[in-house]
Length: 480
Ligand code: FAD
Image 1 (cartoon, protein in one colour):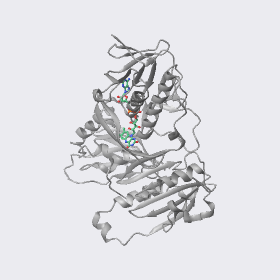
Image 2 (cartoon, rainbow, N blue to C red; image 1 turned 30 degrees about the vertical axis):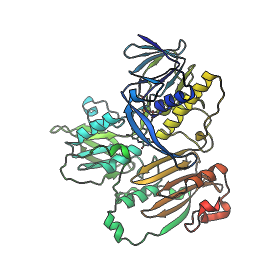
Image 3 (cartoon, rainbow, N blue to C red; image 1 turned 90 degrees about the vertical axis):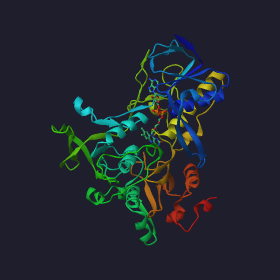
Image 4 (cartoon, rainbow, N blue to C red; image 1 turned 135 degrees about the vertical axis):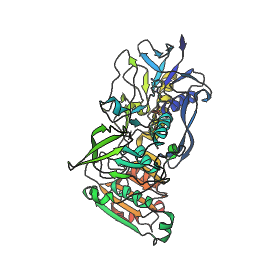
């Protein structure tokens, strides 16, 4: 069994589909084959620009065979690559001869590791529809669930599960640490701990502006934070599932958050097979709790479980190293999305984060890059790699993250200017030498484009002092 194509793309996630789609646009008559493990693929839809570098979009699932014209799909798993001879072999034995290939095989959840087989049965990761269905099945008879991790998935789940006691174990001193700082985490917790009638009875919120050095933003102590609870809406992926537990209490239980903690030990209870967990806190104290199962949401591990004729060069995080044109070290083999690690010298305001946004950008870049080589053209890296930008929803609020929004890579040499209006908006500017280096915009702030310009132009904001976030000054007009 063999097949020939010009472009072979592997993986039916956002990166693979974006890559195949851009190839179909750039090389109208070329043969493009997409190998996908599952007959359902993901693609980007409803793409709406929010600013020059920022796009809002939905991710939709569709049947692989219904992908756009010019893309042939094969439902199978890549097993072997021979890059010197330009062929790949699938698990079912199909040999595909290609001219250029792009690996978009994503990541697999990093699961909490234990050597005991019977414990493994009670640990699940969330990655795709199947794993959410598995979660749903287990929830039906569960009373207590432990969520491990502090990224986007854990944050959404912790506030979305119903009729079940949620124990949320995080290594940090504040929730959602992957995306936001302690101040924004508190903003979410306060906003989401309120019912609509609470909000109606409250006096109108005042706006506070505060300028802080890096050290003043360090997290508050655990005891202070433990008393604050919240409940939230989550982004679309879990709205399609009934995530109710089996406690029969018919309601939402606020999660109990265990800050600065990790799992030290687990054992199975002899009577009902549930897990007895021993947590260790950063101050070395221990705490025990029982749960039906653990949802391990501690990130993903790049997935490349196929053999190659020469070793793929990997980064420390296990991703396949790619250069600015998305090329790996193997000749004519490219990679994009969660499976790869950006090994080029990044622009001042960009860094890699494994998100849909970047899977789409990298997939499209790989497609354009392969097409250009094939057509003998020269292209440059896309301008989206100039500035980190991500639009999302957290706890029901629109969230825009720009540049080095959490001071990533800035050491301790930066200032934060924060404007917060309870239940309405949280704006944080990361300033270094008077220049804006990053921003978190929560709520309908309308500041995304202005912030993009201020970051990219390196405008000196020193002369404006705290007025830059004065709600009575329209800074959009100010810098027009
Ligand atoms: P994937 O989506 O993982 O796709 C890889 C594909 O390759 C899969 O279909 C896999 O089956 C296939 N594959 C793997 N190996 C092979 C093989 N050998 N042969 C054939 N096919 C293979 N990001 C956001 O920006 N916003 C969010 O709100 C958000 N929420 C998330 C919620 C969940 C539950 C999870 C798990 C992730 C979330 N992410 C979110 C992260 C986002 O999903 C990833 O960054 C993105 O999906 C990466 O896309 P990808 O195409 O690189 O990889």
